[in-house]
Image (cartoon, rainbow, N blue to C red):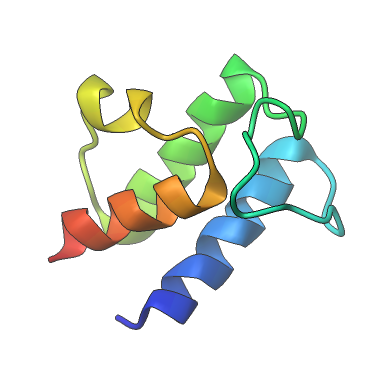
Length: 79
């Protein structure tokens, strides 16, 4: 799967977790600073696991601070 496809899906998941479908997300800014709280992070990771049939562990998800981090995590999991 191409990085852009992954990025588009993860961005849509972040927007859904924020409950803001048109939110402007800076890919390098902290997701927390953009409004994604702990329950939103859990929702995001659940959507990622469901979409790509993954089982993410806490070590993987703890390192996700930005949208780009989430995209990188999915790319590694799919490799």
